Image 1 (cartoon, helix red, strand yellow):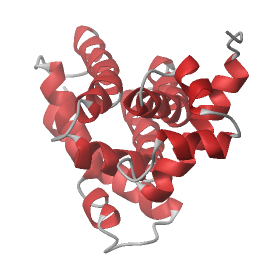
Image 2: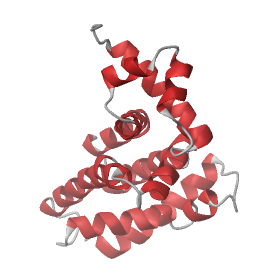
Image 3: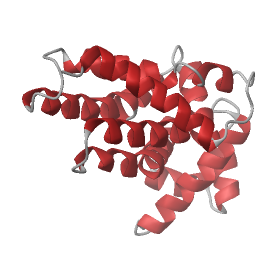
Image 4: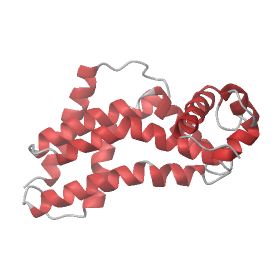
Length: 199
């Protein structure tokens, strides 16, 4: 058996991501991924046990690419309004990116047929918003925010970030959003959130 390499594994993930985004999960076969990579299905199975496992790796890779830097903002020593505004801008740019939108839509469409939807939620949104919940809990202990359920507060913040743009953008009712527009949306969302929760 050939020795696995991280570079080869990442190449498979990159090719699979492109195929999934172009054709959807259901219409992309292991054979096609193998052909695009330039190898055999046996090579794929040396790295991944199934198409679902490849898709999970694609989700993990996309999350790392788009979200990790954004969550680093939570550790910066800045006032809460600045942190949440920077976080919100980064978050919206990430979830409105074409590859994240495509992956999210595929996870939704496959949720009734496989565990992909659950994996997407557990490894993506749930994990990220738990970090934000922890940040909000810390702000309570520092008497910046009123005592509250930090997990619910995080979901309120998520809803406010997404309220003006995510649905119309995902449905292509809106096709272009400028950086200044995103910043204005996030500024409004943060102000509403702080009106409700800030001491």
